Image 1 (tube, helix red, strand yellow):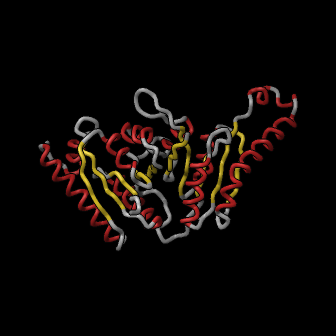
Image 2: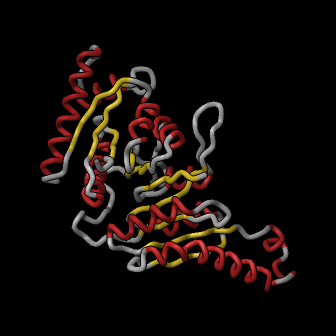
Image 3: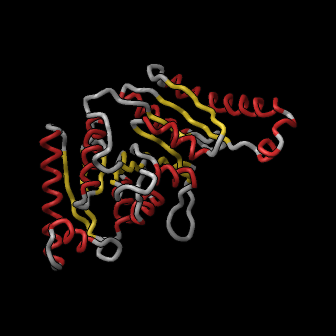
Length: 298
């Protein structure tokens, strides 16, 4: 059986946008779509959320469950109408949201979540549940931007898949994801590596102006070598590398402004409590306007 694409649904418009994006991804992957609503009575404000959505007063647990079922049914019906033939299942599950979603992601090809709105700089407001879920999940997790943003319609040609690459890290899972997504979409991969200029250059760049170019060439060669096996495996996918001077997160965000999808890596760490997000993944998740995929690696 083909593993599903799983999406978290909570009744907010952002999760509906995530469900629509996940449905399109499921169609691309020829996979079923699984809708999941988590009854997290302690970790997520579902009662106030439904009250704000429907302008009603406090309701009991059974009423909230009925409304959750109604939301799942409505989203499932909408997805089936928009994507005929796509197998869709829906489930309501109790527990802590991040833990339940990470378990549901374990047998999925991908977990898709919606953002919580717009930040001051135009990016995601990724709440504690989203952050915790990304940190706990080794399956690729995609955070989808809110509705209302400029985005190509499903039938339009796809824009680039932008991938932030640290040549010092294990890039295999990250580049595999980026090239596979580009192959499905028929678009290009743009690999970005940002490297900060050493302090000595900003203080006295005239000391040795040739060193900067030497470092840039070395990084470009390392990035090209990282891409080489994936270019051979996906010869139909056009790809280019961008080696840019500056903070890595800033360079990825700059290149991602016109992307269809952004992919960043997350090193798998097992601290005593929760998971871990690196500073680049954290910054891109909070400030990108395109959907962001976080790929775990050793």
